[in-house]
Length: 429
Ligand SMILES: CC(C)(COP(=O)([O-])OP(=O)([O-])OC[C@H]1O[C@@H](n2cnc3c(N)ncnc32)[C@H](O)[C@@H]1OP(=O)([O-])[O-])[C@@H](O)C(=O)NCCC(=O)NCCSC(=O)C[C@@](C)(O)CC(=O)[O-]
Ligand SMILES: NC(=O)C1=CN([C@@H]2O[C@H](COP(=O)(O)OP(=O)(O)OC[C@H]3O[C@@H](n4cnc5c(N)ncnc54)[C@H](OP(=O)(O)O)[C@@H]3O)[C@@H](O)[C@H]2O)C=CC1
Image (tube, rainbow, N blue to C red):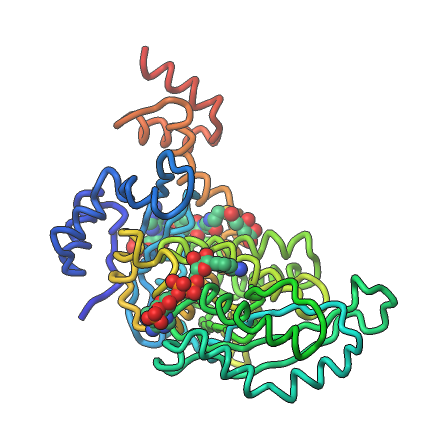
């Protein structure tokens, strides 16, 4: 059986790690070439993906290890430029697996398409007219994209809202139609946009109004994924702190984020530290996920923590994260970018729902990693020690000099480029 528990993976050379991954995941010759290539995204492919291409922008790709989610092992590809994130996710996943792993669930994958109608002579009659034709409109939407119905998805429901009902302004009063679409394993933006654009002429006829916007909503609050972990305090202890101290510190840190947007934004940035790298590595649209996540964090009226941490009756630390997660395992650039194809193979996911649940688990792990560091030694100790290698490179260190300079920076407790430059000059002399 495949395991994601590979102690000391980080002490191997890159070549050793690559050989192990190739063996574990049975990569073909072509897949190995893609993963190990100096040009992982061929410029010819890049030139077909976006416009005005002059090159590509590589990011380090690491594996988040130790993840046990609903009893299944996952090594999780993460594409990110920031040091200590992959280490931290793996660290917390190691603790959580000892407590039985993450448990997760997901709602149905209903994405929302919006149609904006303005200038209706009678906005209430317009709303009634649409609702009267609801079933026909759903069928029309499905006729615009029949393959989704064939695979068990497609448009399922429709609602109508009136915005700025009391406003006297013809600009601000409008009717907004929401089309709810099960996009199966796709994120679904293009699918939905095709559907809502096809409905626009009929909606204009029914309402006697003018349709302007016809577009997906990135507030995917009917496409949610949830992750949970329950950790006995003894698993949180280290040589300097008791498990209870760490546990209580994490809950205090959560309460701070729950009560103060200045803290919540940083707390949530820490969660997105885990989420974005998986979204990026799997070829998904991280702007969509970011936008939806932050909007969801304000659903109770003020911006707050995306996660919840509390102590249960047995004294365990309990963490929960629920977020809109509009990701896919097909569509967009997922099967175009060679590395994203490999990321899906390494993950071994079978559906978009499963991928969404993995992503929120990494977000929850990452949040605890940051909070555990913050409530004990502080973030600088673990993070800056790993960041010291980037500082050494920025100061001009190359080859074996990088680790030597990085270690010296940690020893003198001055992890900054100016100091690194001094050390590089000394080394070269
Ligand atoms: C960095 C650690 C994990 C060290 O923590 P440590 O206690 O020194 O780790 P350890 O040596 O005991 O190792 C434990 C496990 O961690 C992993 N691990 C340990 N080291 C490595 C490594 N080099 N490379 C890969 N994996 C590593 C690895 O899985 C290892 O298990 P093993 O495999 O040995 O059995 C810890 O200090 C930590 O989690 N720090 C937090 C880091 C963090 O959050 N970074 C994000 C950047 S800061 C930020 O942007 C967000 C923030 C903080 O502002 C958010 C907020 O305010 O809420
Ligand atoms: N606001 C936003 O966020 C916007 C985002 N976008 C972009 O849209 C892209 C995502 O759109 P999306 O519609 O997902 O991508 P696609 O247009 O690539 O649609 C997904 C395709 O996958 C095929 N497919 C194969 N198997 C499945 C399956 N099991 N479930 C679902 N579809 C399947 C379908 O083709 P078939 O049915 O023919 O087999 C479908 O056409 C992203 O690149 C995103 O950046 C675009 C506009 C706005």
